[in-house]
Length: 275
Image (cartoon, rainbow, N blue to C red; front, side, top):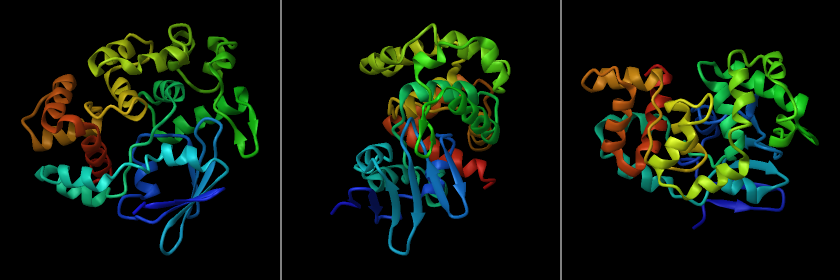
């Protein structure tokens, strides 16, 4: 039985055990959303959806339901993933806490720009900068502004990125647009994870954590483990203390294998919540 129903301008998601918009949108993987009262507004690229909770299902209202079926990874059985990961003692409580997490399938170019902006930044400020970027360079849509095209972003100088609040990341944004095109990012999809990671690390503003985030949330690679301050703290609490984040990453990828990226999201969300 399908866990969702697709209509002309909606999706009904019935399986609340494996889909929770708060868990999905607030676990650090995406910035193109806002919450107003009890509703979430989601606006990747030039698309738009409103998510509301009803008694028996979540309703996703959108003009492009097929897009959001893919975006929310609705055809994947997350119950199987959670069952496999629950064999690890360290993941039992995080999975109970973040039971509704799903890994989004995001646009590679939007991911690259957004996560360069995210480095050493907080979510409120990231969303503010990306909002200004949309307003200044994005096409006007029925529900706001689309994420700007590569071509449009390339027409402005470094001062523009400073002006919208990107800070020291302004030079990274300006330079990365001259290093790689959206088509090249797509072409890299056929590379093995380690080779693809090296390509991403060669880009301005892309360090190990940002590279792993792009691999996980953009390329859908499960064999990665983004390590930030929260994961670093978690590792030093439950494992042998280690300062080298690359070693922490490698150890956790070895431990969780092809499901490492999913494990990271449960652990990150749980750790950041203060548990």
